[in-house]
Image 1 (cartoon, rainbow, N blue to C red):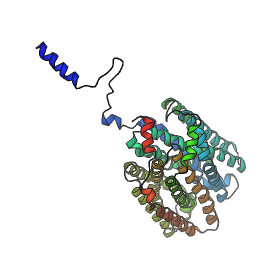
Image 2: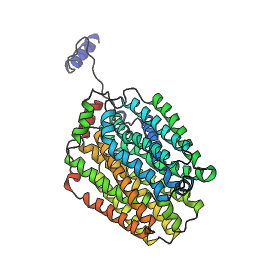
Image 3: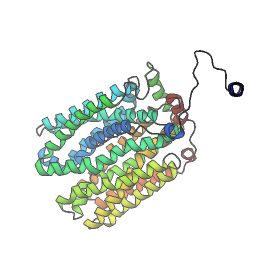
Image 4: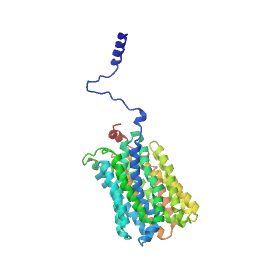
Length: 431
């Protein structure tokens, strides 16, 4: 019996690789474990996106109140959106290049505290329009870096074949902001005043900074390497595929935000009661969950086809706003469907950009900048139409611009991305 055991051990040893006395045999993770997403950390990143988007879009639901409080027209309050967006558009790439040298946790903490200060200064402005505008520009500076930090960190934490789903998960923070943050802020502003809405978001940002310090590891998203990450961000901008994604993003965002910035006046003029505006915005945000789920399920395998579908739905909704301009019910239903279509867009565009970019920080910086080019120009153009009372022209022009974005998705470069962070993610995460 002992001889049989010895022979079996000898036979087993002969088929194993040689292992030195100080070496260890690596045991691969089971497929399920290797593909598991770090949901707790992604939730913190999604919460950062929630706070960022709530800060950015909060004036949309409070537009009439803010105009009264600061004794300016609604179009002038639109400057809060366009000025904020201009800072983001101009600052996204350089701010990202600087933050690429920092550990991601520290970068996110600084950005969240800056957001909190911005909202607190708006409250302290006490009716002084220009001081409030400067405070909003400070928030735009934080926004210039937050999406780059969040998306790059989510991509690094996720398994390579689940990057699209991880980006969709953190992008869900945007949908939560539109579903709950902005409607709740609108309702709170209507009940106790707009200052409480901004103060509440400021407090939330402080609490979120504490949660970030506790939940994210110090080296989340990879360790910086001197000035090299900043140079990599700038070098990635030369890629033709990333440029095409950037142009598509800018054209689509221009069409979308020309109308969305002034969705509250559009809904009111269609006959929706003032007390129901927050419910319409809530419907817009809740419907966005369908868009997020669709983008999360399809972003890794069918990003271009899903992107086209989302743009088509947006075009139809913007056109329908002209048709239903005198129908409160029709307008409300259209806005809800519009929310589902738009919510799918950010993660799809980010996923396509990540496939093209050679730097994990460059893709979100470019998409963030181009979205805000659209927000800034859209808010300004939409304000001109709104002042003239030409709401039908506004929504028709918005639909035409979104249709232009759909045409850009037919380009072959968008369908056949080159080597990007799909390969880079393997190197960064070691998977």
